[in-house]
Length: 558
Image 1: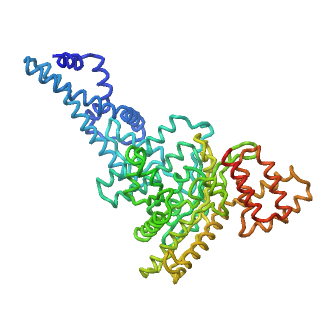
Image 2: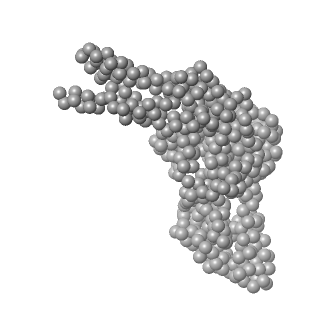
Image 3: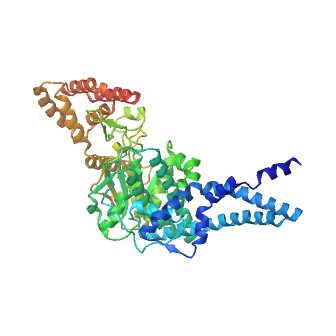
């Protein structure tokens, strides 16, 4: 029969196949021979890490395609050997099946190493990222890996510096390495959950999030300085961290604030905050949910998933869920009130600089007045305070503004090229405190007193973030520098006086400036000239708002 001839040709013993299979099974065979040995000295880790790298490269192909081939070949040779009475064919089939069993044993050996790594990182979350990767690779190496009592090198979460003058470009290899680490770290908590349960899962999530942050920062050779974390030492209550949003890198470095706070308190605390995540990205997207495993880990941890275009009941449900989890579980939340990343900007010389503060959202949103922040954080804090009041709990909600400076340079919105050797600063501002007695008598979420309280709290959040970021001073400094090339000195003095009225609660002029500097450079001078004219002639506010809409159209179309 034709299938017998095909099988005979497919499973025939060829030396080139033997050499390929031997190479693919190099690490499992070395592990089998050295099984009683356990090594962990940095000198031996150099060689074991290399074997681990090779193992990670070939493991999937060997344990799927090659194992299937060997299993079928083993059955074929044994059956033929029995039929024709040749012991050498039976022995060849037995070797094939033995290699299949070796693949299975190697899988459990590697899983045992990953479990020991989980124990290690749960105790030592501030391990240096390079050492963590070395341990991870050695767990798949040819010799059983022995973990030290403590990391050989740790980091200071308040100030870490991975900059390297020799490193000038983030290439494809760095991206693939970062993706590989993300996949491994995303799936580790799921292994922890199956192994030791939810409490251990929470510890591994916390440590894993911080380590992921450190690995990403190490791969782009960034420096991160956390300022003002001392103001959080001894802070009691439930915490909501409010970040300005300029880059997807903002999610990566957020855990450093909590790690810095833990250092200030001189204790190991839960480091991983909860985020409000887009449901379509993390639950509905197969890549993030199943392949990378990020969505599954986030769901198990209890992140709040939000419909990005949700309105009415959908938005209220997300607020109620976030407030309930904040009070029930006592784990910090991180919220980005801008709702999306601000658009990237260029400096006077065409260099990449941080994104702005007001230039966020769609064109429709940009045209509206004071719609640069979402009211979600104010709703969550107010609802949580009402829950505390209803339960008779005397505690407080801390809204902690954190200004990010530099992430918009690393990788701004609209660009995929990552810039290395950037210094990122995280400035922790003074917390806004909401107590149960503050919300006494405001009624339900549909009442007018409730809405008034939310609006007032929303304005306080806006002011706190603007102060922490320092956006107004930055915009005015650049505005007056450019003004010297547009008007005479006397007019500059007039503008300095005229700008005083815009330094209070009304920030429309600063929002316009932010949008102007987000446009292409060719539009700066014409728009700045018109803005100067409007301010000097005391134009009505409606005219300024209409001008902002015109600038926004040009900015979005750029």
